[in-house]
Length: 455
Ligand code: SDX
Image (tube, rainbow, N blue to C red; front, side, top):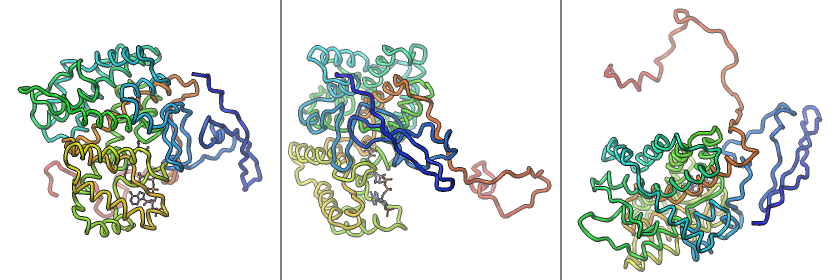
């Protein structure tokens, strides 16, 4: 790959109107997208912090992995449009691309696929971790726990400052996530684990380990395999989203990569992030009928109602999420192939989208369907229970997390992530001995005492 030129610098001047002091900051230009004001030394020189809850205007790092143009609905993995990768590539090739920065040659791809296949098994001791969970445990809770436990199995031989060992850790986690995800599901339904098969592709193995019955042969359905592989591609990476930023922040302290990925899984689980695909299905099931759509649209607009239209809106996309477009097409293909073309949930989703996209509230706020809006309908049609939807998102996103972790570790500008705050707490005050303190009303925390005392 041609060596990218380092960002050129121009300047941006900030003026402190209290003193008239001018602060001339460098302006960093990337290869695409908005420039960034370099404020690394701003607090040191100006004595003031910048305030940006949720990091809506903050670039946390430089990255060459994924580019998003939210206004135009553009998503590129290492420069390649998501539409072309979804149509012409496969998930293993996209993993290679995200990790190495270039599309593999045929020989490189064969070697990569073979190497990944030879890391899909779990250490036999690790299998005991599943049995520590209740059968009713959410598969995401199991996945967080088991992936975190992997750090105990590879802690000794993971020198994160050795590029070879970083890549080995990447291969291991990418390879083991389908096994862990499938086992997390099978454990909750009391079905025995089945080992991955090296004659199956990545997506075939994921379906096989999830749905096969040990007493029968299993032949993966090519339509489902292709749809699942495409879903994994669409979820592979997405710049500095909450879970990827979590992985980077955890990794910036030098933590074990498996522990960092476990942190990313935990962050992804939230309904505002990767948990939205499960929440969309629950929302559609709750709406149930097209005639009830207006009342849910009204609730989504009501500031006194915490309800939000799940699968709608995005921090970066202020236009249609290109992944949602591809997911909707995949919906048609899968439902058609499965003879479920008239799936009432799809019709309900499309009517909800139609009404919302005509509503001033959504139009004004540029709220469009995101990747999660249609994914759940496809996954449900494929036979996955809703509680597995975010597990599948995590499996797809693992390559993105680990690619960013690798990029962060090898970036000479990386420092341990340690944001500051705007302090709004109590000013300095003297300690008051217990016997001299007034006894105000009942403190709230006794309500949470579960030790058998009186409620
Ligand atoms: C993912 O970051 C990524 O890249 C994430 C992701 C990835 O691949 O990693 O793309 C995956 O997480 C997709 C998003 C999945 N989440 C959902 O579908 C949950 C529903 N969406 C919202 O919670 C929300 O849109 C977010 C969390 C996605 C984005 O929130 P922001 O950027 O903080 O936007 P905001 O809350 O400031 O909203 C701006 C306005 C507000 O109204 P006003 O204060 O201006 O009056 O839009 C409203 C919000 O109330 N709004 C919604 C809404 N989303 C935003 N109102 C109703 N329904 C919604 N879904």
